[in-house]
Length: 150
Image 1 (cartoon, rainbow, N blue to C red):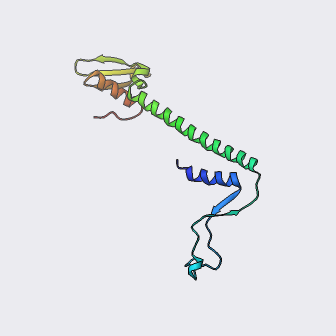
Image 2: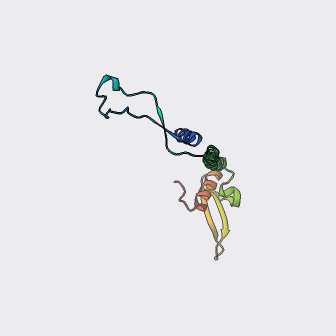
Image 3: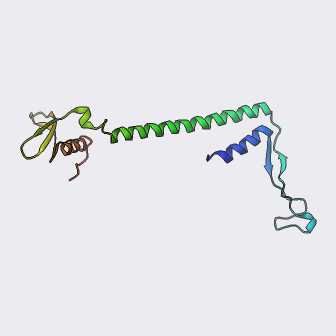
């Protein structure tokens, strides 16, 4: 919709090879008519800007219109892809704990989610929580390099 005015102007130019303008009658300044008979015309008049071949102009216009439409379509497709990604993340399908399956244990006091081992044989990534859900959420934060919420 934001291109509507621009497209209509281009369409008129390409279709007719003309520019629509309003002009002041001869003898009238921008301040107003010097006499009542010189009142400005409210009808638009056509002033030829150049003689152009109608077929070539319409082809150019259609190429431009297709280019704008393709650009808008790509933007819409990217917006849809972003929305789908955000939705799948919100639904939990792409969370790190679902992809990498950490080991979840209860040590008697809290839940611990661990993943991998470092050179000393200790778990490389350890996340803790008061419930399995909290431990896995903390694992996701740690996996993404963020501090888990307190």
